[in-house]
Image 1 (cartoon, rainbow, N blue to C red):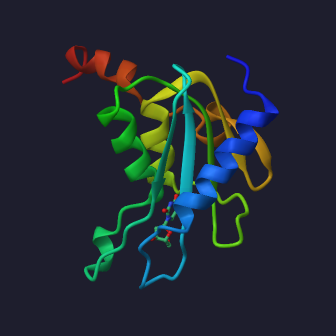
Image 2: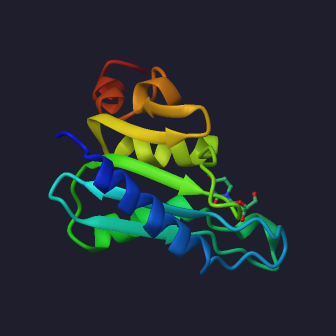
Image 3: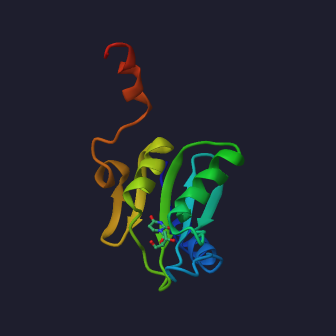
Length: 137
Ligand code: THU
């Protein structure tokens, strides 16, 4: 699925809008995320922190929750932004979340430019790896 420049621009706009709704009184580091799903819909998320700091939800957590709760599907394009509306890198845990729901050629708008999911999480652990569970001990 080819992602048009108009779709990338819309993802950026949606990510900025989500970032402006972030709840981050502790880090004061708002993050907004947006993604294009393979059925054409767009989904978003923002980070939601907590007085118990370790409980904080990254923007990608909300985005993946929205993905599943609005019908599932595979992610085709992804963007997340910081308070300056600039691309920011997903943390390691969020790369794993995205990997689980990625279309084979998911492209992410990273600070260094657009990268595929295999470039941001090479050799990632996924559902197929669980197929080996009967072979191990
Ligand atoms: N954060 C995200 O929302 N996504 C990431 O991938 C990296 C970090 C949030 C978590 C926390 O609320 C704030 O950024 C600072 O770490």
